Image (cartoon, rainbow, N blue to C red; front, side, top):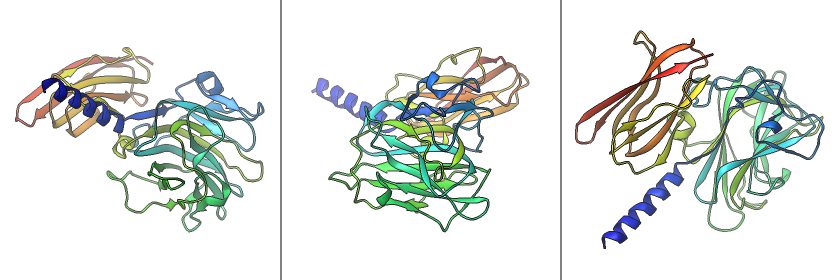
Length: 345
């Protein structure tokens, strides 16, 4: 009986961890001028006009992948590219989030989408940009073909401004009935998923995704495709992971612990791993040598488990910093631990 219980607990833990996964992160932390093909992206469809890394990266207040590394630039016509996710699944919902700055909008074409594993043609959750008046554009969302693409031409976004875009793909049992939604924000990020998306698509028409296994970026036709900068691409399985760079590694932890960050020294970002033995109020903050708080990575309730948090020091000067983990469990007991980290630019 005990063995059955332990097995069930393990399966539950693995399932919960999978549901909270971040399966894709791309911050373009590569030298400006490099082709993204030199950094894990696979170009196809054309050898003309490959996609290059550009500097600086984009920033959007409150987004977990803001101001990390550089960005990349998509232009009209040329090479398309895809990169594999770290895990492949076909259950629940997936959120594709990224920062976007449009330089030129044209008659309308999509530039990013999800792909199934081992496939570079079945684009789905297609995010589209269409010119809408002088200096503005509208966003659209397509499932798998031009015939089931919907644009919200009643809402415009300014050329040259950085916005946050979130697409959602939800697997539904059955055939050709998966659900799609698109959100976009010019400032801030709601703590919970809004009830009304900017755009939703018909559930009929194109085939559903077999799974989510890749992210594809596309440079469309000369007359239709936009020219834009994109950065901070993430695919996750919960809305909360759009906001934070805290990722659940496991829902099981034996004790409270705070690991040394890696890499250390670092420039400009590093990863901090910690474990919590139960649910409770958790604070993970970074301080400078004078004790001034420079970043709050976690400040709220977390469940028991093992976590990683990414700290970005791009806006800070080189030097010694400290990070401190404080935890108050459901039993009221408080524990804390502190470690040093070194930023070298």
